[in-house]
Image (cartoon, rainbow, N blue to C red):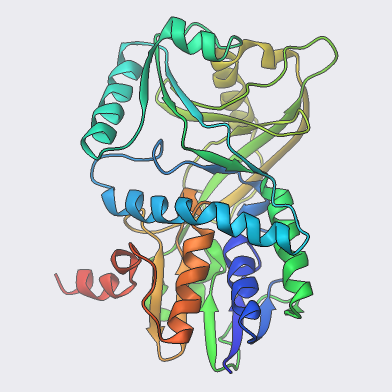
Amino acid sequence: MTNLAVVGGGVIGLSTAWRAARTGRKVTLYDPEPARGGASWLAGGMLAPVTEAWPGEEDVLRLGEESLRRWPDFARDLRKEGFDPGLAEHGTLVVAFDSADAGHLEILARHLGEMGRTAERLTGREAKRLEPGLGSVRSGLHVPGDLAVDNRKLLQALYAACVHHHVRFRQERVEELPDAEAVVLAAGAWTGQLHPRLAGAVRPLKGEILRLKPRHGCLPPPAHTVRAVVEGRPIYLVPRGDSELVLGATQYEAGFDRAVTARGVRELLEGAERVFPAITEYELTETAAGLRAGSRDALPYLGVLDDGVFAATGHHRNGLLMAPVTADAVVAWLEGEAPPAGTEAASPARLHLKEHE
């Protein structure tokens, strides 16, 4: 039975460790702050491959949809073991405020229609009927099949499930490959420092995120995840079951800087006020910044790097979404079986091919 080392204790590393330990493998996970220290702890929790889709990123959409199909069973397996991941099925509403936004929405709707995906076009009035608290919107796109998950409940559930299956935790930052029969590199933005083939291929993308709660007398949070582009900047509002609202997210290149900036907070709040005006009376309960693991082409790197060394990194905005398909792919490779559909395009072998083009 393979002795497995997993480097990284975010959603990808924890999911992989849990799935592998369920097969009877001895698993050791390396992370200085498992379940709490990385981008997963600060994520919005959207499981929304359709509303993230864009022409030219069809491979990302296919992989995301494959993982979305696995999410209900993934969540059900955690619940069967006594751990609730906080999965919600409220769908996504994308809204547009001006002609430029509406044009962006039309491109997205047409692209999804060409790919046979379900998305309902809405007038501004219809969007406001669906979410009465919206600001003055011109049009909307309703995607009922999108899911969301409470990222912190999920991480706590995965950590507890790993403990239940005797995963060994070593709370340290790894600087060289651990001694094990198989190693999975899932350290997010830091993974590029762990293997020469990933050097320069994985980079940190800073994102600030806010958490808010309605005060007494305030309009409650939206029932759906609401996404918009405000003055060219994407914004999302994700409701939580305990009347909390997650607001995100800025995105820019800043190296490994995780400081929250006044500009980032201002941009998020100004954008959110246009989307959902009642938010100005909410209590601001948390400001934070995390580092997503960006790849060169929006696809993660999933697959063999060297004999016994696997990449599971570069998920960008889609770490939570792609956790089930990534974990199942790693287990399939360890078992010598075919990985899930869509993972072939994400192979790190494409880095070698591009270097020689």
